[in-house]
Length: 86
Image (cartoon, rainbow, N blue to C red):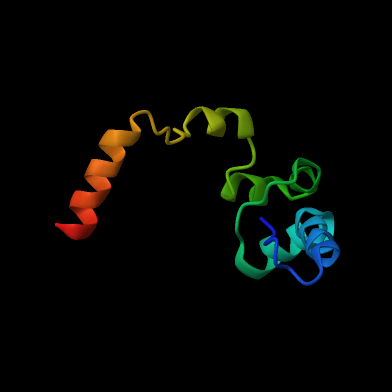
C-alpha cells in the first residue's frame, strides 16, 4: 500500500518494483534466506535452495494454505470486542 500522503508515490512504486524484481528478491534470499514471490527468480535458485525455501513444488504448497475469510461481521466484532475489552 502507498499512503495517499506519500510525498513521492512514483518513488514508492519504483521501490515496490525493485523488491519484486530479480535484484530485490535475490537480496532477500541472500540476506535472510526467506522465501520469495517471483517465480522467474525462484527458478534460478539451486535445487537445494528451492527445496529449503519450499519453492520446489509451489502448486502443492499452495494447497496447504488456508486463507482467512471473514464471514460474519457481527460475530467477528463481538469476538474482537470481548478479546480487546474483556
